[in-house]
Length: 483
Image 1 (cartoon, rainbow, N blue to C red):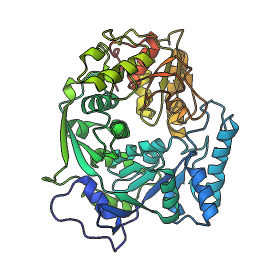
Image 2 (image 1 turned 45 degrees about the horizontal axis):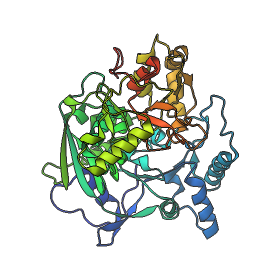
Image 3 (image 1 turned 120 degrees about the vertical axis):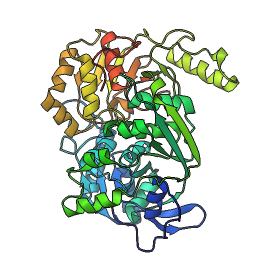
Image 4 (image 1 turned 90 degrees about the vertical axis):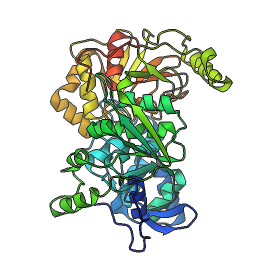
């Protein structure tokens, strides 16, 4: 169970409240009266980039960890995804991994180490282990911490100094953001997944639309969406500038959480359920901004530029800078096309590719791997394409292998790798070569994200799988390619 807010926390505001306001109010330790507050942190997640420097600073300042039992660590960013890995072949990465191991052990922090059950990308293992729970405040030194909001948690990424502060105090000072609700009506069409929905939302609203906001996703599409899709959607919230993304907990959430290793059990489960059922936004609660999206009009998406907002349908043509609204928009399109090596007015479909990456904290869960495997089953990766599948966690890898998914991928010509961030971030020596074009299920495609000069097209797992088989960007999702 998440730790309760201290008894000194102020009473919640009267009247209907949003999900965000309920979670914020329940974690306030001190309200500073200027829009900011000291908040209690229920779960603090560490990885190999942020953990070791924070441990070093604690040691230099002579500070102990305040609540080691609420902190969990895992190597993910710099570990190799090679099948026989034990860490990394690079000395600088080994130092970070060892620093996380040693710092966690000496401070009694639970470590999910390489190749051990529970290890994996921090935003995959949090939900799958039951570390992330409805109502909790979950923080991590990584921008895609917004993922955890899919379970009705309040979650965002923190900076280096904040990691140290949380370790020492189990609290954080934060300015309260504005609240936005995105209501998604209609229904997703065949072949359209949560990744397509997120890209379409960002393309419509813009990469800065969420700046200063905590975003709640609502509406009939969300109510029907299973947890893996919700995790993908909340993961991508940061790509439109939002502080956090969240979805109200419901029966789908409770079914997902029940029985997981760190979830409440027995009589505590019933107590937790009673609390969690009070979390959804009250009827009549006001948001600072409201947006509506018609999901029925969305087709499978792929990015054509160097920002997630530069996404188009698979069967669309690349936009012409001359048709852009304003000089700045025209310049942005032109610069992106030059970097990506694309021509205005041409179909995006048919563009030759070199790499395919199925993985990352956005799309590496078991359900993602199943959906992509349905596309590649009985087919072969194009001879000129190098295609990788990197499961999001050790538990996902083992479950996929029990189902034979690894064999489906291997027989098709994919490389079946070990869990980690891998080609998403390029912080581990695993890179797309300069000038190579990669269709990736990751979350970011800015210049150099997957390596200097790499050209990245963001897409869903089924689109990425179809592109690997075709050797080019496809114009549709093939039969059998829906999750």
